[in-house]
Image (cartoon, rainbow, N blue to C red; front, top):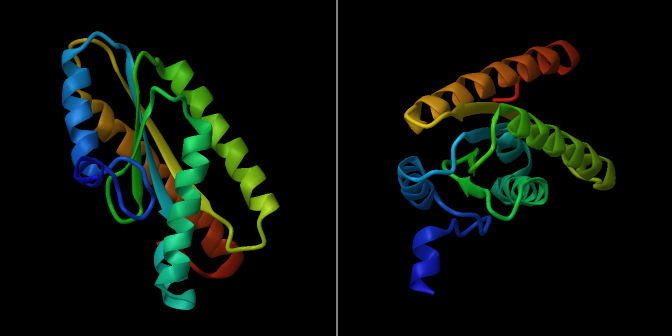
Length: 167
């Protein structure tokens, strides 16, 4: 039980940041290249917490975890690495495979939102891919930049339609 708690996020059951960083270091030394990383941010979490309480925000994070687990392969490392941030390591996945995975996330997310009568789950996504010899930190930074760009797109759309930003 202690081993599980040291490697998993208590709220979502996903791997935690420490495990993610250990796996990233291990995979960087391995031969599962190309390797892609998907960064995910849950938009509107702060607003959900402010308007509906932290229990509603926690539920939003658990829903995000379920969507991500449904979208990725068993060998992918799905982790919650921060308050509203998730990261996924995709061993042996080139940019094309990572883009296909991101489309699966968007498809499963749309189906999820259509099936629940709750606050819609909005995710910003970004991808980075590393070849052998490229530090995985570069792929992580690339994925983070793409995720931020996706978040700006959501923010612009949300501001125009509702006067609020995804935060």
